[in-house]
Image (tube, rainbow over all chains, first blue to last red; front, side, top):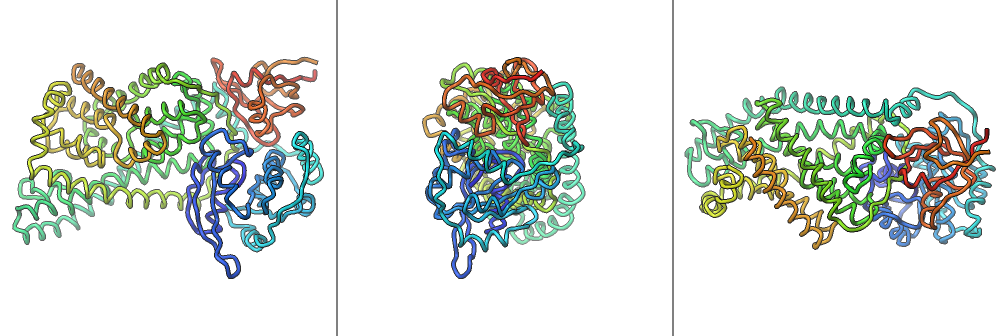
Length: 562
Length: 78
């Protein structure tokens, strides 16, 4: 346990070998994770919990932390050595609770850089529990922490509740010494990036650069590595299988798909071994990888909370505060972690607004990658129309939701961590974790989606639904009847759904309408499941109703305008 | 001696917190991030149009919503 952003998750990963996402902003961890560690001959269970400043929770993430504190037998209290006073406040509360505690004095390396020296032995003596300096990111002190675990003990450390701060102040005075030093480059950058006149231009430039890096790396990986592999190495094998299966028939179409002009078309064929693998691996994965590379860098540098402060004013129009930008940014990668991260927001109202805005107007990277593939050739005209529309929807929807949702919206109140140079090893590990997670979660659903399409088509269900929904699909949205297939599959995977638009031969305005509607109308099943858990069934239904209605209105309007 | 609320503090100026107008909840939230009576805070920045105020307290930076910052009073030593 410990304050937010002190490195609990990094210590947890070090102790258990279980990888959890860690970043440089408060509120990265919103759920507890269990892991195991050997301690002597015993195997003990270690639980990583979200951060909290005290034992009075103000958000669901903090509630998790406080609840878990009661469950543990021993508490490893991770303390930010550079902010001893504030962190000891929680330590004293934990000690008073009477549980055995070990204190990990983390970020120990940083204290030296900023001129703080702490007398560890004295602190240990005063607190009466083991205190171990650690630097979790490099693994320094972790061994000592493990060997001290059995010596954790409850302390009869007593103080009066009202005098807690006084006590903390006294302890800090006894053990800490501060020497003066000069400002570093990173600290100057901190000031520049949060003052409005320099911070806002810097944010615009940063986001522009970020966007271009993502596209550059994504496109590069596709063009240089993945497409050649599929076209030159995989395609011949598939053709051989296709020949063996007789170039047509039910089994052939399930595995290889329909041949286009006697050849395999990796997007249009819709076979499990062709489209089913090509879409997630060669079209989506490169973008997911490059997006998470850049996002992880932003997370670890400490830029996100500063961005939150800069956009706070805008978010107020939506009944949110700046921190709600974090679910939106994570949602761009995948809506599932985006929805989870709404837990850093304090009230139900905020979480409802943020989750609804995100699942309607923020397309995930898998879908964005497919839209790039589908509309990229039309340049800014096509892409601008899709993402511009979604951005306008995001803003208008936010304003409306703010008007109609009941409840309170508190103000931003958040700690801004110092800039830290991302540690390459940690960044790489996080990137691999997220990429693996994508492959594990996405590929089965893509395959299921492709399989389902084949079944639905051969049973005539898509055609039937097409006729049934023609008044909406054709009448309001101006799309061909068969586009209903994409909407059905969109519930499983949005990327496959966008891919299904390719053989329909749509013109640009139809492509724009279809891409926007596919983003908005409903979340994919994985996001849907998380939203039910986070919002509850009643609010989820409300949210779903807003999604369908707004998708129809916006789709209809776009159809009229374009 | 001059007592003003946090939003009126100039960028780069420091003051000592003398009063917090608010209930128990607010006081507890503020103090858990190190802002409490007797602490020295230095203003880092404030956003336009009643945006959040960023202050440095001890070794950390904290962003505080405008309304909340209005309730925190500091004394500047001239």
